[in-house]
Image (cartoon, rainbow over all chains, first blue to last red):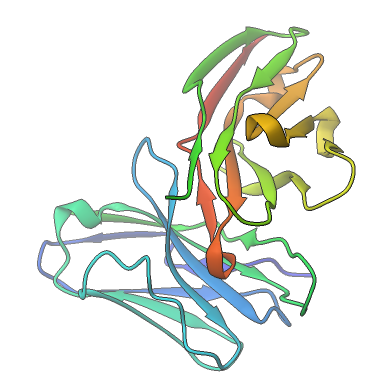
Length: 116
Length: 112
Protein backbone atom coordinates (compact mmCIF):
# COMPACT_ATOMS: atom_id res chain seq x y z
CA UNK A 1 0.00 0.00 0.00
CA UNK A 2 0.93 3.66 -0.05
CA UNK A 3 3.55 4.89 2.36
CA UNK A 4 3.69 8.07 4.40
CA UNK A 5 3.44 11.13 2.18
CA UNK A 6 4.41 14.70 2.93
CA UNK A 7 3.88 18.00 1.20
CA UNK A 8 5.41 20.17 0.02
CA UNK A 9 8.68 18.41 -0.67
CA UNK A 10 10.51 21.72 -0.58
CA UNK A 11 9.56 25.03 0.94
CA UNK A 12 11.51 28.27 0.77
CA UNK A 13 10.21 31.11 2.88
CA UNK A 14 11.29 34.46 4.20
CA UNK A 15 12.16 35.01 7.82
CA UNK A 16 9.09 35.99 9.80
CA UNK A 17 6.57 34.20 7.59
CA UNK A 18 4.38 31.33 8.75
CA UNK A 19 4.62 27.90 7.11
CA UNK A 20 2.40 24.86 7.18
CA UNK A 21 3.67 21.34 6.48
CA UNK A 22 1.40 18.41 5.79
CA UNK A 23 1.66 14.70 6.52
CA UNK A 24 -0.55 11.87 5.31
CA UNK A 25 0.13 8.76 7.37
CA UNK A 26 -0.25 5.17 6.26
CA UNK A 27 -3.92 4.24 6.30
CA UNK A 28 -4.87 2.55 9.56
CA UNK A 29 -1.86 3.80 11.48
CA UNK A 30 -3.05 5.31 14.73
CA UNK A 31 0.24 6.90 15.77
CA UNK A 32 1.89 9.83 14.01
CA UNK A 33 5.18 11.53 14.79
CA UNK A 34 7.02 14.64 13.62
CA UNK A 35 10.81 14.86 13.67
CA UNK A 36 13.29 17.50 12.53
CA UNK A 37 16.66 16.84 10.94
CA UNK A 38 19.07 19.74 10.82
CA UNK A 39 22.01 19.61 8.44
CA UNK A 40 24.62 17.14 9.64
CA UNK A 41 22.61 16.06 12.64
CA UNK A 42 20.38 13.18 13.61
CA UNK A 43 16.64 13.38 13.85
CA UNK A 44 15.11 15.13 16.84
CA UNK A 45 11.63 14.33 18.06
CA UNK A 46 9.05 17.11 17.92
CA UNK A 47 5.56 15.77 18.65
CA UNK A 48 3.58 12.50 18.84
CA UNK A 49 -0.11 11.84 18.26
CA UNK A 50 -1.82 8.62 19.34
CA UNK A 51 -5.47 8.27 18.39
CA UNK A 52 -7.62 10.73 20.30
CA UNK A 53 -5.22 11.04 23.24
CA UNK A 54 -3.56 14.32 24.12
CA UNK A 55 -0.41 14.66 22.00
CA UNK A 56 3.08 14.48 23.46
CA UNK A 57 4.45 17.92 22.64
CA UNK A 58 7.62 17.57 24.70
CA UNK A 59 9.92 17.97 21.70
CA UNK A 60 8.54 21.20 20.28
CA UNK A 61 11.41 23.72 20.48
CA UNK A 62 9.32 26.85 21.03
CA UNK A 63 5.76 28.13 21.12
CA UNK A 64 6.15 29.11 17.47
CA UNK A 65 5.72 25.43 16.65
CA UNK A 66 2.35 23.72 16.76
CA UNK A 67 0.76 20.68 15.20
CA UNK A 68 -2.72 19.32 14.71
CA UNK A 69 -4.17 16.01 13.74
CA UNK A 70 -7.79 15.24 13.08
CA UNK A 71 -8.62 11.74 14.27
CA UNK A 72 -6.27 9.23 12.69
CA UNK A 73 -5.73 11.10 9.46
CA UNK A 74 -3.75 14.03 8.15
CA UNK A 75 -1.51 16.12 10.37
CA UNK A 76 -0.21 19.63 9.86
CA UNK A 77 2.85 21.13 11.48
CA UNK A 78 2.78 24.92 11.64
CA UNK A 79 5.77 27.12 12.27
CA UNK A 80 4.93 30.75 12.97
CA UNK A 81 7.31 33.66 12.44
CA UNK A 82 9.97 31.42 10.95
CA UNK A 83 13.61 31.95 11.87
CA UNK A 84 16.71 30.89 9.97
CA UNK A 85 17.46 28.24 12.59
CA UNK A 86 14.18 26.55 11.63
CA UNK A 87 15.78 25.52 8.33
CA UNK A 88 15.80 21.72 8.35
CA UNK A 89 14.14 18.66 6.90
CA UNK A 90 10.88 17.94 8.70
CA UNK A 91 10.03 14.26 8.74
CA UNK A 92 6.76 12.60 9.53
CA UNK A 93 6.39 8.97 10.57
CA UNK A 94 3.44 6.75 11.39
CA UNK A 95 3.02 3.42 13.12
CA UNK A 96 0.37 0.89 13.95
CA UNK A 97 0.19 1.08 17.70
CA UNK A 98 -1.19 -2.19 19.02
CA UNK A 99 -1.64 -2.45 22.78
CA UNK A 100 1.08 -4.52 24.41
CA UNK A 101 3.10 -4.91 21.21
CA UNK A 102 6.18 -3.16 19.96
CA UNK A 103 5.83 -1.36 16.67
CA UNK A 104 7.89 0.17 13.89
CA UNK A 105 7.76 3.72 12.61
CA UNK A 106 7.61 4.29 8.86
CA UNK A 107 8.94 7.57 7.59
CA UNK A 108 7.83 9.89 4.83
CA UNK A 109 10.18 11.63 2.37
CA UNK A 110 10.29 14.82 4.41
CA UNK A 111 9.81 18.50 3.68
CA UNK A 112 12.97 20.53 3.23
CA UNK A 113 12.36 23.96 4.73
CA UNK A 114 14.70 26.81 3.94
CA UNK A 115 14.23 30.11 5.73
CA UNK A 116 16.01 32.99 4.04
CA UNK B 1 19.05 11.65 29.81
CA UNK B 2 18.27 9.32 26.96
CA UNK B 3 20.83 9.46 24.17
CA UNK B 4 22.34 7.55 21.29
CA UNK B 5 25.97 7.85 20.27
CA UNK B 6 27.32 6.82 16.90
CA UNK B 7 31.08 6.81 16.99
CA UNK B 8 31.88 7.11 13.31
CA UNK B 9 30.57 10.11 11.43
CA UNK B 10 32.14 9.22 8.10
CA UNK B 11 33.33 5.83 6.92
CA UNK B 12 34.98 5.10 3.58
CA UNK B 13 35.37 1.51 2.42
CA UNK B 14 36.21 -0.38 -0.72
CA UNK B 15 33.78 -2.92 -2.08
CA UNK B 16 33.97 -6.33 -0.38
CA UNK B 17 35.38 -4.83 2.80
CA UNK B 18 33.69 -5.68 6.09
CA UNK B 19 31.64 -3.05 7.89
CA UNK B 20 30.97 -2.38 11.53
CA UNK B 21 29.24 0.80 12.67
CA UNK B 22 29.20 1.51 16.36
CA UNK B 23 26.13 2.52 18.35
CA UNK B 24 25.85 3.03 22.08
CA UNK B 25 22.72 4.12 23.89
CA UNK B 26 21.76 5.46 27.24
CA UNK B 27 18.28 4.45 28.32
CA UNK B 28 17.07 2.86 31.50
CA UNK B 29 13.83 1.28 30.36
CA UNK B 30 12.93 -1.67 28.19
CA UNK B 31 15.08 -1.34 25.11
CA UNK B 32 13.81 -1.34 21.56
CA UNK B 33 16.62 -0.61 19.10
CA UNK B 34 16.63 0.23 15.42
CA UNK B 35 18.92 0.89 12.52
CA UNK B 36 17.53 3.05 9.74
CA UNK B 37 19.21 3.78 6.40
CA UNK B 38 18.83 6.75 4.08
CA UNK B 39 20.08 6.15 0.54
CA UNK B 40 20.95 9.23 -1.54
CA UNK B 41 17.75 10.99 -2.61
CA UNK B 42 15.52 8.55 -0.76
CA UNK B 43 13.66 8.65 2.50
CA UNK B 44 14.53 6.91 5.74
CA UNK B 45 13.99 3.15 5.66
CA UNK B 46 14.09 0.54 8.39
CA UNK B 47 17.13 -1.74 8.10
CA UNK B 48 16.56 -3.89 11.18
CA UNK B 49 15.16 -3.80 14.68
CA UNK B 50 15.56 -5.46 18.05
CA UNK B 51 12.60 -5.80 20.40
CA UNK B 52 13.35 -8.95 22.41
CA UNK B 53 14.72 -12.47 22.12
CA UNK B 54 17.82 -13.37 20.13
CA UNK B 55 20.28 -10.47 20.52
CA UNK B 56 21.67 -11.10 17.03
CA UNK B 57 19.24 -9.50 14.62
CA UNK B 58 19.31 -9.97 10.88
CA UNK B 59 17.94 -7.31 8.58
CA UNK B 60 17.59 -6.60 4.90
CA UNK B 61 20.43 -6.62 2.37
CA UNK B 62 22.73 -8.81 4.45
CA UNK B 63 22.98 -6.48 7.43
CA UNK B 64 22.93 -7.68 11.02
CA UNK B 65 23.27 -6.10 14.45
CA UNK B 66 24.07 -7.44 17.86
CA UNK B 67 22.48 -6.15 21.04
CA UNK B 68 24.97 -6.38 23.92
CA UNK B 69 23.12 -5.29 27.04
CA UNK B 70 26.22 -5.14 29.25
CA UNK B 71 27.88 -2.72 26.85
CA UNK B 72 24.72 -0.73 25.98
CA UNK B 73 25.64 -1.32 22.36
CA UNK B 74 23.86 -2.22 19.14
CA UNK B 75 26.54 -2.30 16.46
CA UNK B 76 25.66 -2.78 12.81
CA UNK B 77 27.68 -5.21 10.70
CA UNK B 78 27.93 -6.47 7.16
CA UNK B 79 30.62 -8.94 6.08
CA UNK B 80 31.06 -7.58 2.55
CA UNK B 81 29.80 -4.16 1.48
CA UNK B 82 28.72 -3.17 -2.00
CA UNK B 83 28.77 0.18 -3.77
CA UNK B 84 24.97 0.27 -3.39
CA UNK B 85 25.39 0.37 0.41
CA UNK B 86 26.55 3.97 0.12
CA UNK B 87 24.12 5.78 2.39
CA UNK B 88 23.66 7.39 5.78
CA UNK B 89 22.94 5.04 8.67
CA UNK B 90 21.08 6.02 11.83
CA UNK B 91 20.87 4.12 15.09
CA UNK B 92 17.83 4.80 17.26
CA UNK B 93 16.36 3.73 20.57
CA UNK B 94 12.70 3.94 21.47
CA UNK B 95 12.30 6.32 24.37
CA UNK B 96 9.34 7.33 26.47
CA UNK B 97 5.93 7.73 24.81
CA UNK B 98 7.16 5.76 21.84
CA UNK B 99 9.36 8.51 20.40
CA UNK B 100 12.62 7.52 18.74
CA UNK B 101 15.91 8.97 19.90
CA UNK B 102 18.40 9.04 17.06
CA UNK B 103 22.14 9.16 16.84
CA UNK B 104 23.79 11.76 14.63
CA UNK B 105 24.21 9.29 11.80
CA UNK B 106 27.16 7.72 9.96
CA UNK B 107 27.81 8.51 6.32
CA UNK B 108 29.16 5.44 4.52
CA UNK B 109 30.85 5.78 1.16
CA UNK B 110 31.74 2.56 -0.65
CA UNK B 111 34.19 2.85 -3.52
CA UNK B 112 34.07 0.33 -6.37
